Structure formats: structure tokens, C-alpha cells
Amino acid sequence: MGHPTNYTTDTLNAYRSKQRAAEYKRYHTKNWNWARFSTWREQRLLARELSRYPWSIGDRLLDIPCGTGILGKLLCSFPFQIVASDISPEMMELARGEYPVDRLLECVQADITATGFQRGSFDCIVVLGFLHRVPLKIKRAALREISTLAKRVVVITCSVDSPLQRLKKTVLAVIRKEHVPAPCPVSLREIVVECEAAGFKVVRSFMVVPFLSSEAMLVLERGNRHQQVKQD
Image 1: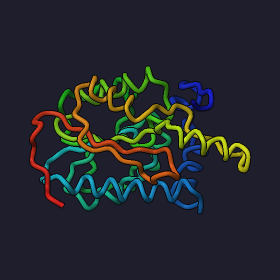
Image 2: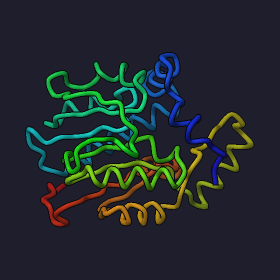
Image 3: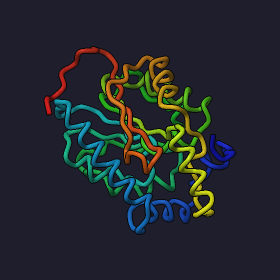
Image 4: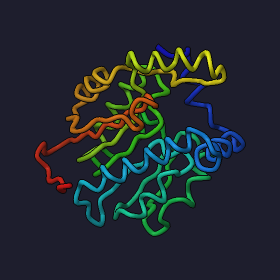
């Protein structure tokens, strides 16, 4: 199912140094590698999904965990007032300059499972690059917390387990021994069930790079189940 992982050392405290934060940002935005392509593809799909909704000035978006602010430039195209949050101050220090300066309300250090934000205070929440790294217990805690904060739309990504992905891992283990797969994949059905248990309606789900990547993106809604959506 995935390589053994320790949430505290591999995720919670993994980016608590300036060097590690800088390496992460360079790996996903500068180096020529699969992670950079996957990040580019992920952002294109996120922009498409956000564009389906009629956002207005004053709508609040939470980017959590914000990492080094990779979503900042994309969010320039939308009218959101933005709150960026991460458990790592070192990551957030690199993130501050990436967001629209006139619409970044604050950067807040917080654990995604217990943020301290006011309930129902965000019209949109984006959670990328986190759920694939953590065990089911933490996935559930994060989804419950996000559910209490969200008013309308949440976009998440996670790693999906399937026969095809298990075959791919087997092949890569032979031809690319340095390859490290996502440590905590679940089936798409399992993550849908967990989202629904947290109070969301899953309105869309799809693979970020079909066949080649295990990453899936899910669009979740709260509140009015028939809220307005732009037509393609």
C-alpha cells in the first residue's frame, strides 16, 4: 500500500528548516523533474475548477498547507482575499512574496487538524500536497477541521491506490530504485467516503495526470447543494 511513514517526522516537522524549505520550493518550481510537471498540471486543473464558480471581491480563500506559496501566482487571477497557513514558519517565509500583495490578509502558523480559525470563515479552501502524505487518522482529522471552516467549496488532492498504480510501483521499483511513491494512498472510493463523512458533497473527482500519476483532485461543496456553477 505504500512505504512506511511517520507523520511527526516525515510531515509534521519535516520542513522546519530554511534549507529544507528552500529545497522543496526549488524541487517543485525550478528543477526539471516529474514533480514540477505534476505541479504545473495540478495548477491548471485547479484554475479550471475555481473558474466554474462566480467568485466576488471579498470572498475569502484559505490555502492550507500553503507551503512555499506555489499557488500565489495562480490566485492573482481570482478576486479572493487570501489567508495562507502552514505549520512551518520557514515555509511561510518563502510564501509571503508569492501572493497578490493587496489581497494577502495574513500568513498564519497552524496545524491543519486544529487551526484555530473561526468556524465557517472561508468561501473556498484549497488543500494540495498534504493528504497523500498522512495516515488515515490524520486525513480524517484534517477533513473534519476543514469542514468546520468551509462555507462553499473545497478542493483537495490525494494519492489514489488502484491495481494500475500498484503495477506502476512494481515496475518503478525495478527500473528506478530511487523512486519514492506517495506513502499513504487510499482508493478513490475510500477518500470519497471520508469526505462525505466529514459533511461534504463530492461534486467532481479526476486524476491529475491519468495513468502516469496516482494523484487525484476532488472538488467538494458545502452549504447549498445547488449553488450556482458557471457553465463550461
